[in-house]
Image (cartoon, rainbow, N blue to C red):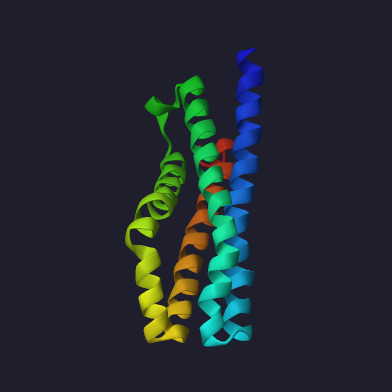
Length: 155
């Protein structure tokens, strides 16, 4: 029965990562550029918060599901003692997103972004897009390395 739980955990892990990083990709490559090019400065913050706020719940849920399933798989495989660099990379990416979603954004990022957008809307949204691009890029590297690593590319 333990094998079935492991397979279920891996499948849930992949679904959670697809929803999480896929959502980040959508926000980065579609939502932010569309808002920057089609909305007036006054509407940008409102539209962004309405749409991105919906994704925020999904991101929080999927990052935690990713952690639960990932740490469960590490436990079952006794992977802590043989941790590969690509596994550490995946955990670091998860930790960055968890820190941003659960700590930094509620404490100050939300308020700071509003202040920046009120001072210079275009610059604030450009910075937002750059930060999302950086996070998406390192996330995609982690996904690539994780899939390649689990299939033996780095051994």
